[in-house]
Image (tube, rainbow, N blue to C red; front, side, top):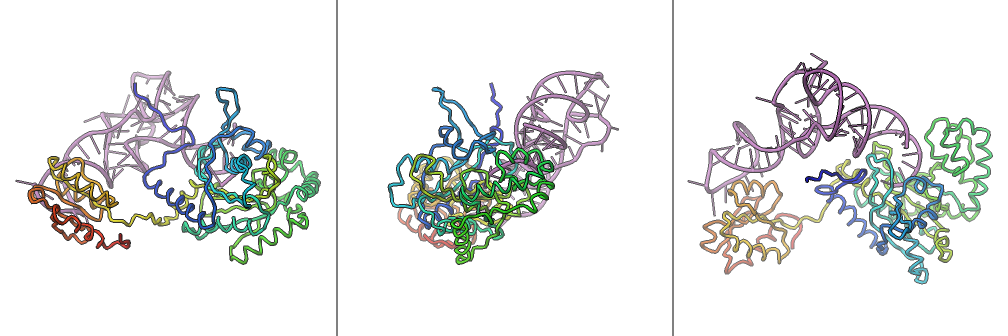
Length: 432
RNA sequence: GUGAGAAUAGCUCAGUUGGAUAGAGCGCAGGAUUGUGGCUCCUGAGGCCGCGGGUUCGAAUCCCGUUUCUCACCCCA
């Protein structure tokens, strides 16, 4: 019985060229996180459902309709993580990391899951990498996190990204803003779209996100969150902007920037590309969340972090044809054996080369020399080694430089070391 | 969850008003060239025409259902 199945809706297989881009993104991020002194943390792929409903917010779309929630065999409600922050904070509290020197700076890389209608750049399983810095309210830390996000994309080779930033204040200033904002909207309520009318009672701030023309029109004269910030929040935001200026990081204040999780306070930001022609143009985003640690039963500790969509970043890298430097400048060697009879000899040679960490392969299906050289050419090998009747008889090997087409004869029993110097003489930039 | 479009070879796509043995380019494999690679030429393999049903003498083509993808909305990475 043949099984004819595809990957589930909204999931993909990543291989070939894509895996190189993906590793490039992840390797670059790991390197940079290390430079900024962040430590990696791996948390479970699923958590008790409560971890997400309480932190992200009961009223948010993610919790309402996008979570992969299931019961295990003992009837416990579990959920595949839709984002990384909640898990990291849970782990931070559970492992009592608040007793360590603060702030604790963590990063993570992994799959997230959201039950959504798939589109380009939006899948049901997708990868994120992110950082969380827990334990300081210093605006310098907001800036460090933004700086890190900015450096990551710079390091990856992007030049035309836009950093959007806003502050939604603490719960106090937000409360008085929401009060005035609702009072302002009330007379226009009839003109808003049905979604926004629902938002009016459930999550009024999200009205700012609406792309409906009529709603935008109403918003034109609306009060802005920024002018409602309390003294502390305003000073905090001003310092953040000031420090960004010091680092010469360009930003754009976006009054309508609102994010989809309830736990954010004060600074929020997003990094977007206008070169992505779909609606999914946000490559990364984050913000400060000063109440979340306490909500998870830890001490009242402020925190800030961001998350980056690996798949979207990969898409844009490919679209912009950004060259990725993949650390592949070691010479690659293709061993051509002209008859299966010579397999033992072939194994000896492979063993020697691999013990010396050369990337090498051989033709497991013996074909004609011309065909094999053609493949070595196409496969991007720097050297071929030819083993045929002549070589076996004299216990020699023939090394061929694919670029210069020069050939060298090496006596394998007495002079195998010669091959190492020969290979290191390669024209490629790196030397061993 | 709402609305629209698409699905033909490994990839990119032709396929007319329903009348074929379903095609091309690229890629893959073999040969021209018995142990020497970029070009050229020749040859070959590879298709439940997404899946299921219906209309019809006859369906890749028309109709219905379904799955997946794409786009917009919603939301987000």
